[in-house]
Image 1 (cartoon, rainbow, N blue to C red):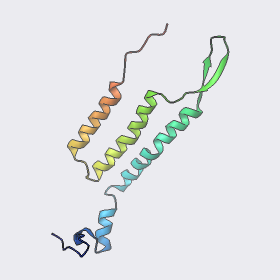
Image 2: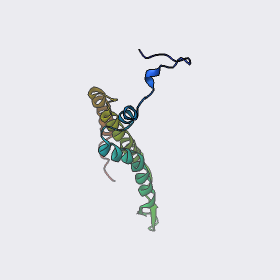
Image 3: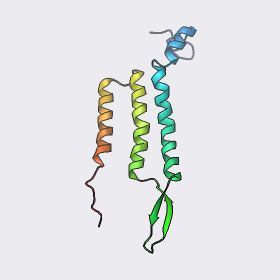
Image 4: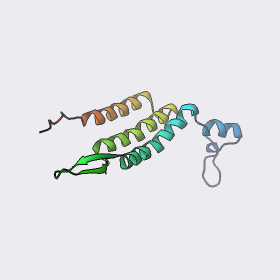
Amino acid sequence: MGKSTCAGINESLFFHTYDQYYRQAMPKHAWIEYPLCALALLGPFVVIILRLTIRKQVRKLDGTVEMQPFGIGVRVIQLIAVLILVPTIAVLGFEGILTGEGIGTLMGAIVGYVLGGITAPVPNE
């Protein structure tokens, strides 16, 4: 065990050299982790902005045509959840925080969540 200081803090928790800090602080696979973090942070915002700015034609009962935004529905919320969770789980796996079993379990739960919401198509009348 590390030597205890007067404040009761374990001295082995502190870095004594820059090399020890650098090895601990830097990501192991930065070339893939930084784009995954960008996807998790920016992806949901891009999806929301696009869904609210792109417009579609809606024909009303009286025959007039109106342009309306697509809006945010259940599928878009699922997409946003997947855009946040999958890159986060991947980064935690690359860093060694999650094991293979944990990653497999979480990915299986996400696939079940996304695919479980698929229903049979409703015919148009």
